[in-house]
Image (cartoon, rainbow, N blue to C red; front, side, top):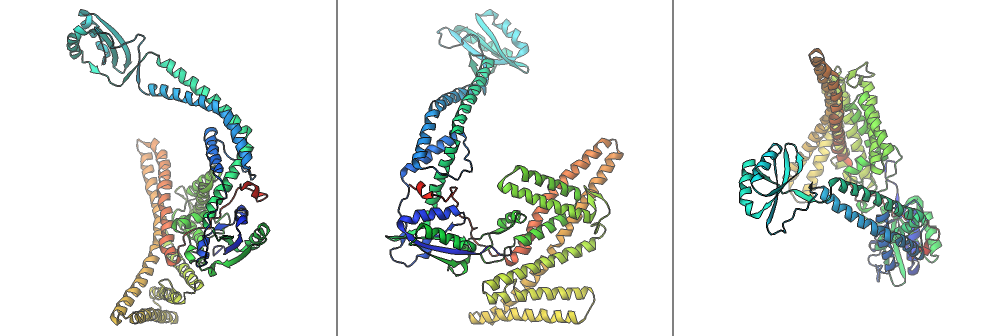
Length: 636
């Protein structure tokens, strides 16, 4: 649990005509992470990237046809592990396409009609029972908007000329009207328009069909489309098992096509390489030997593979409790292979920090409830987030009892009241910070030792001598505060001086070896030691923010309750309870987010920065959905 799972690099030489069968069997195990065989085969003559095509273009055609059917029917593949042969896939798709062709064509036509009607309905429609057109030689038509109360005035003013007035749509205090006059009277009409405040209308669509009828047609089309969709789904349902088999076959070819990019070959043999867990060596060896008895397989521990440590994939090996904390580690980076996995440590430190800064039983219960809902309703990453939310909720509940707080209402604490025992809280946070930094130093020393970087074990910024400076400094500070001058303080002073001298001497010697000069070495050494001392001091003091946010949490509620009491004693007493509820919501949302960020910050910048060495990728094996039984029959 403290380190990622041990991996080995598997190199297998198989006959060329058995290569794809071997690769397919390995991928079906679910633990084979392909690796570029070209890296392993460097320097071997006649080795080149494997070019043999194991699949024909007909499977590409099957892929396109299958995707089209999935898009049209909304088919969701089941967890079937049985694959379909090409003949089965061709037969199934042909039968489905024959049944869908006329239905899809009819549905597309209806969708087009529906789109046209909806485009009309999206505009400002005016229904006119008579045609108004400009094709007549002596007639002029025009529409515009006037105030509703002026309709009678318009009728009166138009009385002196031949006309047709058609009131149309009205809204608010205006109405759209259509006017038909003789072209010889346009000049008279222009004067009338100015008199009544005529407003031109450009966003009107004239329709000879009532809006109600258009809406009814829309509902009819939607109903018909729904019936066609039901027919399409029935067709897909009748073939759901066969479609599932096709999905598995396509997965086989897609995954093999992806994995074969890492294969190398000569004229007669093929080299396969990949990472597998150490305990899977026997299984992989048996699969390869059974598929190609003439094969040769070797397993090289990752540390001896010659592959740079940052290039080796990392396989996290956590139980269900720790799984959500991989999200926090992953946000910072992937721990390099062979280094200590910090997931367990951050699970402890993150929960303690969050609970200490946001200790309230009621608020924690809300986080817990929200997390349980997410775990129940969500999938994949969001489900992991829900678990994480549940954990921080439990931490808040526990610290709520320790602090004696539920929705800001205080009760007898099991430990301290942060507002009354500030000095105790400050000392506890400093002690916690010292523990976290010390843990980071020890993890860094172990990482450096495991990589056989002995010089860095002693002289790294988070190495042994830097740690001794830190711990001796803590001893000296404790002695000063206690006004003690005993043997322990003297020992700490001696240790402090020896450690500083060791680091300073190392940098001075390095400068002399590099011919940079004694002065450069002296300056570098002085600055380096100053950086170490001030860095540890700043990092330790930074943990006081835990107590600051704990006090801030209580301070928020002092303010909220004070305002609520003021409202209760005023003429707005009815707002007292709503304000309390709003105050709690505000604290949960805003302060909860800020505390989450601060917990991450302390872990990332004060803890991870001491030891974390990043890798480049997680162990991510290619996994075939198909069963390994008789998989070869689906490879053509």
